[in-house]
Length: 154
Image (tube, rainbow, N blue to C red; front, top):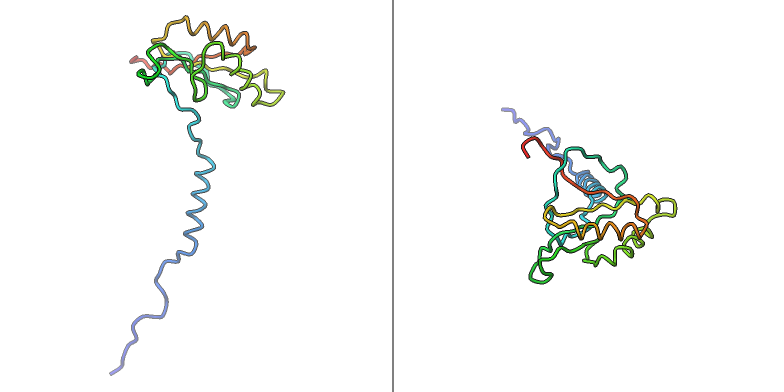
């Protein structure tokens, strides 16, 4: 009686030698393309809605000013505060903030800086107009107000 050999000697394992390379390529891709949140917003933000919006073309030239009631009212009180980057500032410090933001840009782009105000819907206009006046004194001529797109149901 003849004996038959089992198997042909070929391996049926899946080659996994390239798997770590693929994983590291994906890891580097996500590390390079992911943008982390730059600022921690310390004020309540209920942004108004609008119908006619334009999209900002160069976000690198935009600096944000947040105005609203602080989230931690036990420490900061209930009066609306002005937040830039990660700190609260007074309205007199807006000019210094503008100059600091301009210094971050190149010489040619300093005149193109845009200040974006994200103002809570419940904030009174007085603090907003005070910030506008300080921005004018700081020679920040481009100002925009952030809002969300209003849908038909709103």
